[in-house]
Amino acid sequence: MDRLHRFLEVDDLDPAQFAAVLDRATEWKLTPREVPHLLAGRGVALLFEKPSARTRVSTELAVATLGGHPIHLRGEEVGLGVRESVEDVGRTLAGFCAVIAARVFDHGTLESMAAVVEVPVVNLLSDRAHPCQALADYLTLREHFGSLDGRRVAFVGDGNNVAASLAFGAALCGVELTVASPPGYELEDDIVDRARNLGGAVELVADPFEAVKGADAVYTDVWTSMGQEDETEPRRAAFEGYRVDAALMDAAGPDACFMHCLPAHRGEEVTDDVIDGPQSVVWDQAANRMHSVRALFALLDAGPVR
Image (cartoon, rainbow, N blue to C red; front, side, top):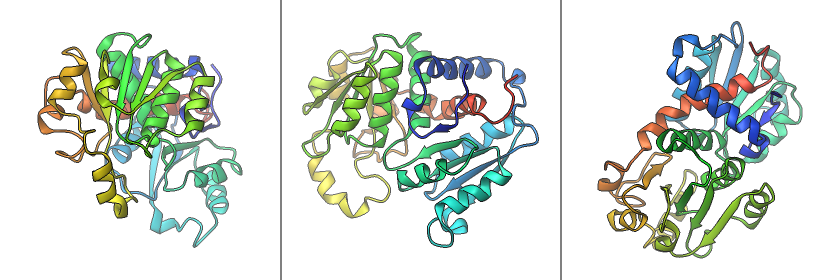
């Protein structure tokens, strides 16, 4: 299996690598004492321009259980593009660390860093993509249903970074994705085209009830992401009618599961009875962040794979 130099979006993987990450995540989740110390004696830089809960905990534990040393860096400590150029920060970190993983505002920051270093660069979140979340999502779906091939996911809400990564992941594993968004908030055309060129079945609709009909999973995310706070009121108005509630889950059917990448704005994009209800798998998704990113790190060009 070829190892990776960068993981800025899900389609940096091919279908075989995508499946291998999920397979290894499942294996090590079931047999944690057999996780090899592939990162023994190595550091992994974890750079966070945005605050984080799940991403920080999952990546630190992933590195630690692979025998490595996670080094957490806050954005204000580094001053990307202010105190030092992005490229200079990348070169410096690459001199110390086997992997650079970063949660950033601007996707271009990751591209600039990856262009000048030889160690792997991993996207922990950017304005364009959330690929590590998508790995955890498809791991969760595979656990829940036993297989991914032919499953249908309905994403209800903003055609954002999470939806984009779900689209690429769907193309790599045979999942059909329908995205329901209000006008002006659809998944971007270039994302849809890229996913379809990978063989993905991606459909855009306006009506959330149309989207969820026959879906195996109903997925949503916040209407206003971090950094968009000045758009809160217009977004609330635009997304009225896109809340995932009991009626929408009923339209999907009793076997459909509910998914959310978290944090959730309860009462806004999802109601309490859905996120806390029996169809919800959001806590499995959160836990699988660690298992999936650990398997991803093992695939990276960070030392010999044993």
